Length: 318
Image 1 (cartoon, rainbow, N blue to C red):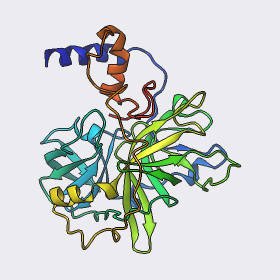
Image 2 (image 1 turned 180 degrees about the horizontal axis):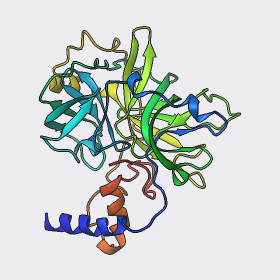
Image 3 (image 1 turned 90 degrees about the vertical axis):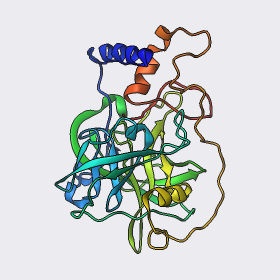
């Protein structure tokens, strides 16, 4: 614990130095008016700012339970007060997935002391046919377009929603690709999430309304393509793979929420790895001083969890 506190103190000193902007909001098309992406908070009353505006989101899934990602929830504590649709509710319990470790199983529940009566819960999407479906990603915070990516973002803390098409799915993730204007498959409101959007819902729309299919978790770039730029990928925790755990912990009747279960399989290509992104401060022959920038990234926002190859830290929000 003393080592952890020392590392956090060192990170605090580093993070208070002048630095470039860090993204924490929806990244949008540069050729579409920003007004088209902006939405009023009242349109999504079941969304909750967890650590502050533009810093992690939870979504109401029952009268007293919020759904979010574990790397946001682990920064919270019982007794914290959240504002939900204008009303205050105290946090009773933080429930991290039991296998949450080194960025695997990035999902958590937040149980409240009192029932929410000012907003309706969102149901879970339970079918496994997400590939090819359109996701609606919702978040607030820093904002940029696909030209600048996260590095060129600015802070306005306004709520935005963007759309994108699921390209791949496996046992943990839904993947979307950020198409540029003129590319095949681009949606009218094409976009991806950014740091600060973590935990934000990725909705699918059915004849019965909006269902939560994913939770914004991490972004990836390759080569000259940086996180949040055109050509980058974005990943959401795949809800259909965690419904049994959610139902058991949240007390949800699966017969009343979500779609019918349909197994379409899925590979493990994008499963998170403990290599190259672990929070450990003891990795081989490298000194802790050399790792400090990486550790700080993990403490503040997290790093890239892909198991493809170890890469530089990418986008998470904490």
